[in-house]
Amino acid sequence: MTEKQNNAIKLDLELLTHRYSDHYEGFAMYDAREIDYPVYRTKVMYAVTKERKIHPVIISVLKTIQFLETVKDDDSYSYLQEITQLDEEILDTILADITTKGYLKQNDIRQDELKLSKEGKEILEKETELVTENASAWLYFDGIFGTVLEDTNKLDQKSRNGAIEFKPYVKSRPRTEYLDDEFSDNKTLRQVVIENLQDGNDITDIFEVAPGKFFRRYICLFYKDEERNERFLVLNKDYEEDFQATQLFDRILNEQKFDYENISPNSVKIFEKNIEKFNETTPEIIKEKIQPVEEISISDGKTIEVDEHKKHFIYVLENAKRSICIQSPWINWRTLQIYKEYIENAVKRGVRVTVKYGMKPRNRFDKIGIDKESQKFFDSLGKDNFRLIKTDDHSKIVICDDDFMIMGSFNWLSFGGGDEKDARGETSTINMNQDEILKQIAKFN
Image 1 (cartoon, rainbow, N blue to C red):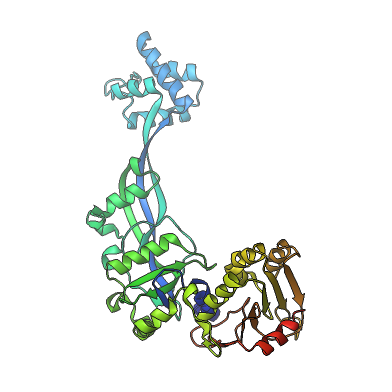
Image 2: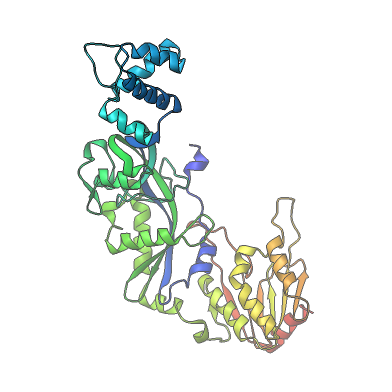
């Protein structure tokens, strides 16, 4: 594993905070972490017995033997060879095989006298037989609860720096020697394996259960309410909600397994930072964070911190009566899609929306002013109540009618790149000075 692979992926805390800060009503988001969750990738070796059709050549041999029994000739073997026209070596192999399977009567007096046994007559009638074969398959076991996982997305062999690593439960490790011990959900490991293998109903024996420890990486957001209750939201690599994983972490929380006892020693310091953030998020802070959009106050000189910009922006988009002016040097879809419905609704109710964007690139590697998805969305709004203006300006402004404007360092339609160490502090101020507001509005015309 390269050094690059071994490092934790930088979480875009600004984007996560802005997008999901108000995901749960009454709860404030206080932290975002990567979680390395133990999974046992397990190879199972087993025997499976299935009914299958008997090969036509074997059927032909058995039918011929049955016919020769009615002839009552002393040399049924010679007649059998003559009728089937099989090579002697091949015929002998077939006879040895069906004798071993018990389809022929054992005759110690005359070897040339061939007769079907009771079993031989039965399988000839059905033309099928039970065959036992060795097989193998992979199962993926949850390292905490011992349940079998259906989702087998990419796993990591090692935990990475920067993530909170869960320790697997000893009893949740599937091992051959514990096949008949209780494993999970009041079932033995043997029962769990058989229920989850494709050949489950036909398995006659399990020879080996060989686990290897891996990790599945989750992006976990942490929430807290004023009564110190907690909730999780788990996301996939595309920052979309993972419902199944969120339910899993809810179970961890309900069973009180998110504690020092179940955290790997090499990630204790990271876990302690999470606890510290939990304790620092006081009821007063939570009350301010969860304040509904309709209840926010607009007052001259008010300072807006990074996680307050979202609800102030939504306030503008929902309450403007005549015009909205937005200036953001860059526009990207992952941010714009948070507000697309609010912008659409503003345009539909007749509000004139103007968006200015653009910064002259410093070199060919510099980020573009707007991406294709955002451009496509803006094009869909038409030109009656919407304008998109390209400029070369680093200002970040939102103006609501001519009532107030918000100016500061916050990129309204693009932001990101901040992990816990280098997350930027973004601050803006509300300005209600009419002369200054009109000056800025004039720059949008």
